[in-house]
Length: 312
Length: 312
Image 1 (spheres, rainbow over the protein chains, first blue to last red):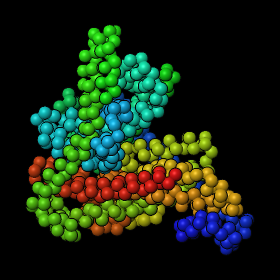
Image 2: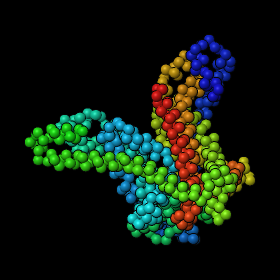
Image 3: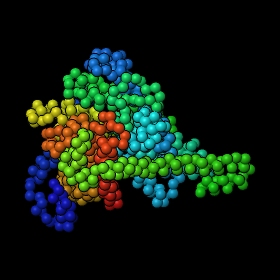
Image 4: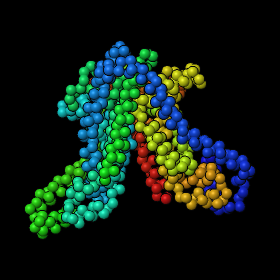
């Protein structure tokens, strides 16, 4: 495909008489076309088929384990006997992380987006910040884990409590900040200039216009982006392992400085032992819960967006 | 600047005189606060670079950089301590190569389908559906590779496939990367002006010929960018390889267990490693290597993205 593809456009442009390219009969060429149309369709479907197989596989393996002891699975602590093992501390840890991460990342992300979109002038510093944010979005999550380990766990250990929920949440917050900033900026950018000018014409200051008009109007986009970012945070495993989420824990987290585990960490801990058949059901059950939480978060995002869109 | 103008007007107007000073003060405070949010991202980058450099120089005080880059064995987690990072880099490149071998053809064909063949309605459904593939937590893919793909391959094509192997991890990682390649490529293909397609049709090209010989070459820089972004994601991907490719640092075949850079960091971090020990420093040295690799890849990808934006 490649060697002919680089030549073809130029050739067909400069010398339309060059019929050498079309040796095959029209029928053959249309035959190739039909084959190609099927091929591109199958390629598109491949990913979706694998996704469907993955979901079915997880549900088939995991649902029986949950149904076997539906209450215990959600209220028990991890146990060395898989029949008694539950995800209570992991579920609680994930909810704590979710709340704390949102607490740090949402104001910072929206604030940064408002500054870059509404205040910043086009100078080298602004450009540096912008390039920097898009680069940060491409940094592997495990590197954020190393950042969290070096700064939050060790350097600021006396304040954050070391391997605590707070350290984990701060790490995740930095990880998802670029996503929130980018989504909020796009939402702000789509607001017509007339809204701002109307506000200034009435004597409102820049911040008054932002607070009363721009933020409410940008809200649907910002919320959707934020929830997608947060759902990424819920599913993150690698950075949490590095900043010291425990894989085996026998207490529920009591506060931001407490030690913790989280759903994906719990799944990792079980999957490491999953060669033994009896653990597969348990791992899959954990994954079902994790995916259910993600599905819930994403549905909430869509619902909120539709609701706020109707209002404005 | 505009705030000062607003203040000037305000002080001339008796209606606003009362609180013009507090308004002015609030405007400035808000601006500084928002700017601080935006500049935090630069602080994050500094934090990452500082932590990596600090711990890595500590590491190189004990292990020579020549040994790190040229030795052919890696056993840093053990007392015998050999530090040939190339063993880990090899594993990372091996799994990345397998992943791209899946994601490049599938992603590119899917991009062609979405842009050239799918009806607008189908496209509106398929694009977000494909994006779901990128939203599945990677620990779930790791579970899928280990408990579904590996047994499947063992039963069918490769009877002597090891339980942990680079092949399943790479294949599943390829599925995860499909949306990255498909969506960036699709943006580039979609941006190709209509006139190019019409020119090709006018010369008697079929739909497939127009797509593969005119449109795709015209979108080439965007497609290259998508592939480099895909490579960057594969290099930094952690949980799939940590779960499914194993923890054995060796120059293995795709059918054998290998340990990537990211998997090594996870292995050390999930054990009990005291801060400041040589083992602790190795994860930062490996992390630096990983960071430099993904950073260079992201910069190259951005260069290509800018190029295709400039053309049209």
